Image 1 (cartoon, rainbow, N blue to C red):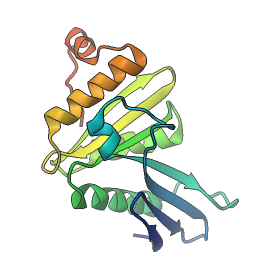
Image 2: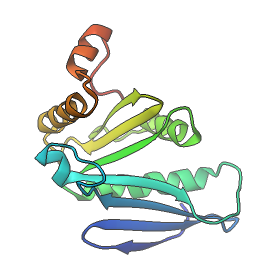
Image 3: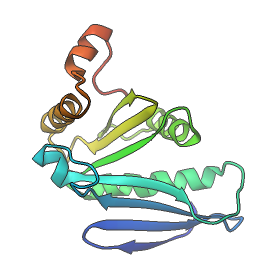
Length: 169
């Protein structure tokens, strides 16, 4: 795991990770303001942290496994330590961030971690939560209501028609 520094406050946590080739990356978890994303749901609005992954330095390097493992370790710690936490992330579909996220969802060995994801209009939306620390029924119900209100998509009907499971892992 790579070394990183942390800057945490009540509304956000920022992790600055330096790779072995001195490329600087930031992983942040920030409270969502209603002006940015309005979930139209008290549970999500109060419990969602938006996750962002960004390369800060100009130096580019090829894919770094230790960077991915460090990000995964920080991410896991966030879900372990907080009750009712829902981590939200949206990324463009078919980009490296989405591929990395999908890989770690499939390889995740934490049985208590759940992920709900959906692709809409070229974007992938992810909601992560710890089912041992979060009311899964309330969380999924809130996510479904959000997509019904915001995108006019009935996810329950969509899953029934497609035969998909509700929580892929």
